[in-house]
Image (tube, rainbow, N blue to C red; front, side, top):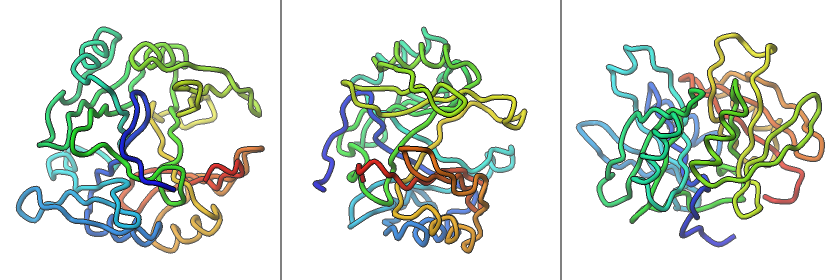
Length: 264
């Protein structure tokens, strides 16, 4: 598949891991997904690591500052959405009830970013790319594949993202629930489900990143052997694929999926 050189407005474009232990986190993910890496110095013994497939950037990671670790902030993945005008989006997000956590600000010549907490509490980032547009490979194994919002108020969340980014939405009935698809130009780009009473009471609203894999069961076994914790065992979703939720050794949660839709 050809490299991705640009990401249209409203499409997820980048994934970034903020981890308690950069060295051990890098070892886990490069082993799990057979990723390469390019460690770029951003301070004394501090690196922003580009995680790579075939020498191309597909995600990134860095070590969380010690004061944030001391404050109890867990390791986490952050999803970025491409936008055409990040400053306009910042103003609109606040008008729609979001809290701006950081930005908008320039990241050197790479681009301009904004981190926000949506009205239901999920954290997400927006990105207006310049020299760095985002993930170079999509629709391939061992790359970000799907993004899913777990929310405690699906109406508020749906209204917010559709108003902010121009997303369309449609309901897709699934076993025991209505799953919401978000679309850009008629193409599904993300999903949403409601946090129910079956979830732990302290589960916050959050965006989950899914990585496409060749075999869900093989990756689950490999993750466990590397020190990861399997939160949701390999489970089939009819007509979609087989997925699992995994917590890495530093505490960041992500999902993997083996698609049966011939799209990887």
